[in-house]
Image (cartoon, rainbow, N blue to C red; front, top):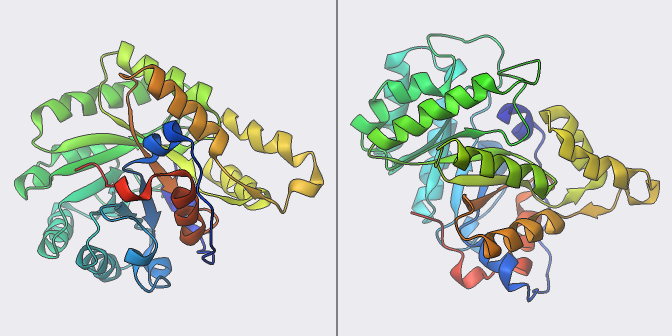
Length: 312
């Protein structure tokens, strides 16, 4: 998953009044959702408390070229507004162990104790690190008391790891991370690429459990956006076969400029979770492709906003 590509074209939409839905299974499934921002787009939101439920986890994407000062300032602002903050640590743009520890210290100084560790969206490492396992293996996050560490998950494969579409390297990495989770003091989860169909997610999650990989899954979902925007993101970010949901709809050209919402995939996953309580999806993570306000409106409409408190 190329998180840099996902975030590089995000733009925030305008806020609007929405109606609520009575789908209790979907509302429960959305409890504890998280959302992703970037420093420059976060700056466009006057106060996140006006649009997100208390306790919503906010990831801060670190795009190549973004200064650490911008990242830390954004994290501090969100933390001061009362939101758990999870900044990205893209391994391939971190020069060395001194830089890694400096970043960890700077975040810790503003109250951050969570992080998303990933390889990052650059092909050639800028320094000593190439993947999230090296960051985890440094021991620095445990040393500095980070309470939660997330890593990337790929329900439809990851061509950045295996260009041929195989999954042996991906599964080996997941087993390593699963073993690490057992010896780390931090809670861990898999934050995934966004998907548009439930069947590949269910199959993947079941396979992980069958392989003994029990790290909870935070499933990536694209927030509401125009269909044309959604297709552009999906193509740029290397979404797998589930993109056919979009391409089928795009055959009707009248729908290209209409909003596309993730209700079908979320409802199917919610019903499966209700029927299968040990299903390993713990939370939903939104990529606000059509803007943070539109995603916030969607969760207010379909969720139980009074109880949308992020998992600790």
